[in-house]
Length: 388
Image 1 (cartoon, rainbow, N blue to C red):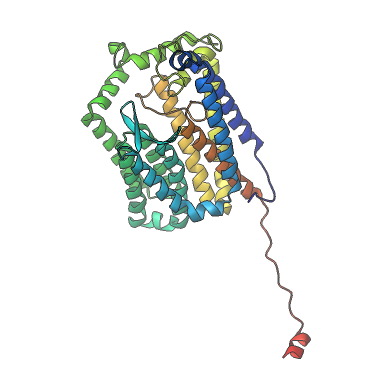
Image 2 (cartoon, rainbow, N blue to C red):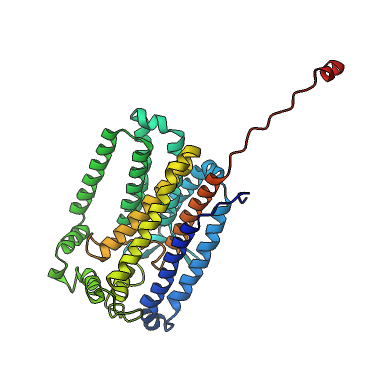
């Protein structure tokens, strides 16, 4: 049911449309040669991306049509469904393994990445929990332990795939939401310290993660093996210089840089658009996150659930964009995360659009004037006497 009185934020829609447009253009530019060589069709990935884009916009309309009351009421059920999907991915025969990671469910010709659905549903679930249990969260350990245990369960399921990048993004987002909800500072610092310790422990105990850290510190030491992807990405940044080599003129996308249209698409943006083009994309993400955060305080006055959810989506989108850009530029160790709204990938595109549609709906409801309580007319005393 659509809200009767709209106040659509066209600035947010403009930022959203700009990032989707950049994504479509850059997916076409980065994938056309790879598509021609692999599938004998230069437009293979472009056409699929357009289909995903249409599905994402249809999904966004569905999300926008649902009131906040729906998400508050059924958020827990949908969260359980997302956990079931995370478990189903791990079942042999149901989950699809690609490059050593079992993260996808194959439904006919469509593949669904369960972790992307878990991102959306986790934020919605925790927003509902914090809006109901804010006092409990701020007062004692019981309200603190409950969400932490749920977060640990999500992290375990994601690490079993393994999907270390999504684990970091979801866990970081939920910790930020807990801080925003008013968790005690001592508990917050304990959680952050424990999380950082676990990250270090996993890196030390896992040989391939340790190798990634070593490669991150000096990718040129093994540039044709473990450091190949990062060095090729850095070469793309270097070739772009200030204004880039021009749209479509990238050399690195010609089978030098792996995952050029997915995880490392920002490197192609930097090569073809230069520092100026890369800065424009970063500015678009900063403006998008700032726009989402600008709603939070006003939403908190009317609907705490909407405020927590929009805050979570802002942190999640900003964190994932930061990690993707940081990996491509060599600022962070390599992680398999897409650039929101830009990289090729159906599940990520659909879920990111759903987050923004949710925000638009919450913002639209926030702008609706509150209805004054209807006063019942007082009955005439004489009528009461006659009826008596």
